[in-house]
Length: 83
Image (cartoon, rainbow, N blue to C red; front, side, top):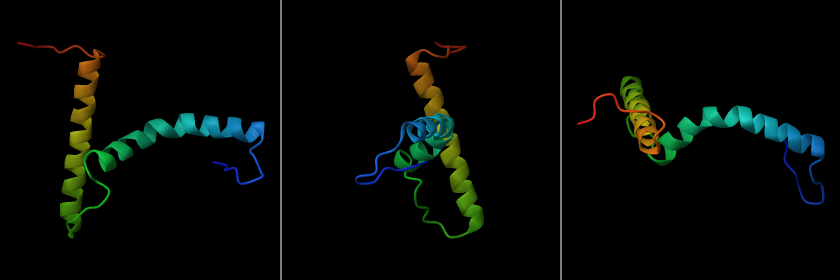
């Protein structure tokens, strides 16, 4: 990604290149931002590698459930057996 600085604006080519990069990068970075901001996963307070892996696994599971519920609420998926 290119950045503009004072008195040196980006050219049209660099602006378009940044746009293409952003379109490719943003879907992959969303899970990390949700885990960091909503599940407070930016810093882990456990010290052993096994515990860190388990904590990360539960954060990923929580992200998947969070996404599933938000898709259900938006009506993008139908619930199979709703009472």
